[in-house]
Picture 1: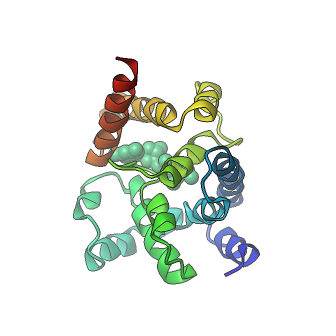
Picture 2: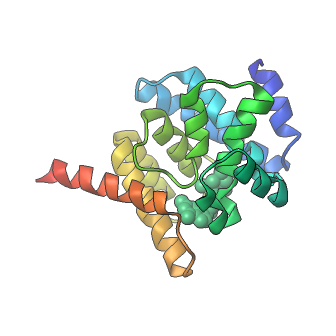
Picture 3: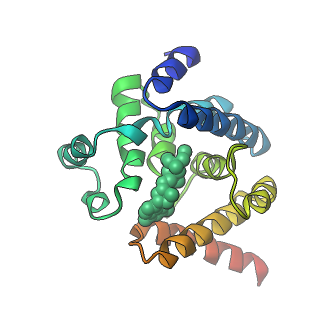
Length: 191
Ligand code: DGI
Ligand code: FE
Ligand code: FE
């Protein structure tokens, strides 16, 4: 499928605001791919599709997670995280994407996971820092992202965990695994 065709299908699946966010993520992801020597084409495709499943029906999502033998733990946590694994599934089955690097970047864009590739980090951080994002700390997040993907992952994950914990929300285990991975790797750099 060509980029334009993909964008049109994505646009029809979401409100305009979310589509504008998607374009922002694509722009940022392609810039980061250039900066960190990753495939710009893969970054573009993963970004365009990353939130495709954001408005997918909860019941259908639940059924797909079970039927397609995705990690059933997703079901125990906030439905806000389901669109990531469902998005990876739909990218494959509705858009014909077979590249596992692209599918994984979509799958882990919300929670993060233990062993993230450069493309995974790029999509996660493009989602966090795209030009439409406006939260306290986003400017700092952008600066750190331009300097080090790993440091930016640690920054973003620690804030997300802090935010969820402040609301006493459950936190998906992979978010902690990712956090620990970057916390350890950055500590090792310091000592
Ligand atoms: O889809 P977006 O709004 O662009 O961004 P996202 O996919 O990162 O956001 C999904 C929301 O999920 C985000 O506001 C935080 C929330 N969330 C709920 N439970 C968890 C979680 N995020 C993480 N990382 N881990 C969780 O367990
Ligand atoms: Fe998302
Ligand atoms: Fe997003």
